[in-house]
Image (cartoon, rainbow, N blue to C red; front, side, top):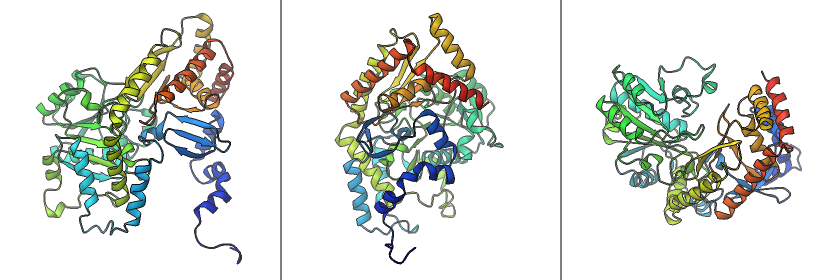
Length: 464
């Protein structure tokens, strides 16, 4: 550093001086495939600021966020109440994370969470969704004295080793063996569940009430009947609500859509953070926690260094307060119903559009094989190169032409998943439906998006 250069840390100055290097820095120091992928599909944007359900680039162009940071931004970006709570907790200079006291904020957040979960009694706070799942797996194994966890095909529960063991997507698991000896069953298959339970070594079934990969829900009644079977065999039901919880599906939890379902353990994270401070929570029944923490000798048998930190707890409390004050759950239900109904009305209009499904503001748009010869030949070309390319062909013009950010729901899936901030309004619904209609018109008219499709085919073949 030169003598005349200013000293000390200045965030604004650092971003002003080095912000333009963002993609080069990632390529050199982080996951080098991320910028490569973004450049390939034209997602290498430079967003300057964000608020609510919108981003703006350096030219002042507005982008609609239908991804919500993979569900983290439930209240959108920079909600003023959450921001104020974080300023307040920093200004309070609390004696945080002493490890040998009991601060009030964790207890208050646990109390508030449990008020939405009346059949549950206690909470463990960690730092992420995968950590919440890891906690549930450990607690279920210890409480039941059994080693094996059941999970569903195509499930996603996280990417750390324990949660990866109950991840139903082979692409995430490949190359990371040996994993824990857990067992997959088809989503909704009660007979498969019965067969596994008869072996007598099952601790729990972990299940997403709506799977994020493909936006697939089990058949009606499955969760309730699975719960009865599990309890009959002295095993537990774990509900992974990391993405579906906190209003996403039009109820506080997605399992609440089915009467009589009361999971033994529930995992939440993502939206609880307010988009600011990572936090995960595992809620459970009193007897499970008391079995795990059975004596003073076991007081730290499961803990997290940054768990229950004041900033995360303040963010969580602010999020739940906003959800109550602004009736966020009811808003998500109404807006989600509107968006899903308007998209469903397009299914008969476009032969490439197969199905629209989901609940609340968790919506899957699935594409399928068209009937007309010309479109069918193009569809077949894409499928031969790599399944999922047509969905990517839709996602790209939504961003490039209409400034709407979406995602393909999973590898090798012809499904787009919509998980926008729960605060989107009717104007945002109009904007998305209008843009999606224009993209579908282009696809069925043989427009420019098929030129991009040929580029994707070449890329897919080159990567084999």
